[in-house]
Image 1 (cartoon, rainbow, N blue to C red):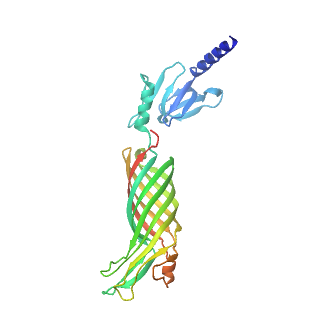
Image 2: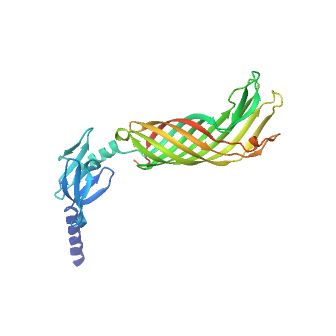
Image 3: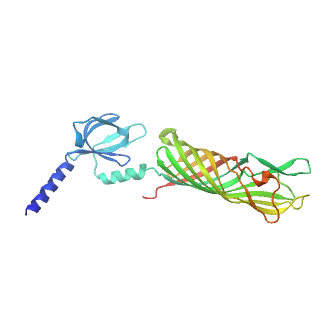
Length: 305
């Protein structure tokens, strides 16, 4: 009997505590147990419920979704284009909060298809054409396609992982021969996000990251020109580094487009050939640095609904 009375008193005391305080629900989902002092035009002043003799805190009204007062009444704050509207009539609190989250939630994950290309910084002469000009190849640059997974971990911090393929060709095509350098890559890029424009509809990402380049191959079909060979040379897998800047424009909640520049450096080393091997150090240890221009379409989502 004493246990039943004790449990009952505990429940009554707990319920009394729950309903004798104000709760501030932020749009981020954080709930603050408080004693609201003042609701102003742009700010809300409150004290912590468990320390009402302590300092007065101030929160922006635009960051607040709802206040539930100790007497059971509630205020919800609806953001319009130019102001924060306050309403005292709430029939279904859970439905309103759920609808707000669906309408205003931010999709922090994204998948992106990037296409682009660029130029390597070190050109290697291959052959002289009949008009006297030289054609060359670079171990950097070339056309590329990649798939990107990114996540906005914090408001100003983003992490992206790229999986892609890039192909360099002769800068001037030949009628009787070809030469290509191909590689796959996986890149990891942490970035600082700089929001710009109204309601963060645009942003610029500044990133520094690393690249793992693998399945690197130099394919030559040059036997039809004097002194030329046909062969397929393999180069070592290598680690490179890069700087990247991306400008993104959001197109609604789910989609965005972006354009970026990627400055990168990588160095390769010859491993094996079919019938031949390079005599020149330029081909033994080629420079794979370059600059690429990228264009992408992003789809934004959250893993948990």
